Length: 187
Image (tube, rainbow, N blue to C red; front, side, top):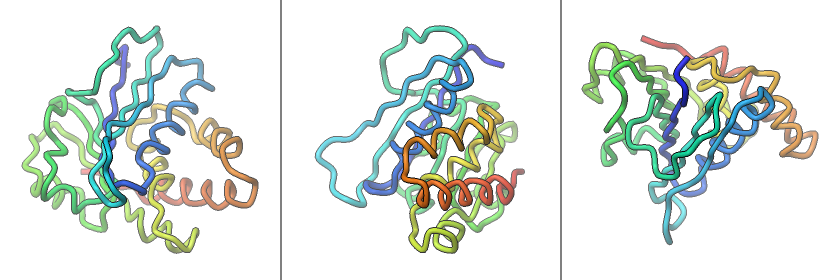
């Protein structure tokens, strides 16, 4: 495994990109890793593009900047792919995880990414609406990222979610995570 895994999250204000980044980072702490999680946004309004970053390492992290060459890119809203260069800087053997009903091959072609890049898709919005009764995709994408990367266990994510949310909300969110984990598919 690489020394530092860098993940860049793309979403819209209010979708929970930073929340997902924080939950992933905290799950990694439970597995004895060093972490960073931070957003990049200004005075954006709800719905405006936002970016969040997660670094996970087995050694202390000395970098303190945005992630320009991520190992993993997570896209919470596929409409961002029309206006935001989400794959920019992605490592040549990187992974992209997209909230989409489209096939991973369709997303790969749409983004024009090289052959070594692995694309994962999951119908996160549908899963969230079915279980949460709301299109809150942050935890759904967390499940897909866990499956695509294997960077943290579902048990560590469950612990994090149980500590973050009240019991009934935690149970529903973990159900979303588990279903997204099962439904995520790759190229």
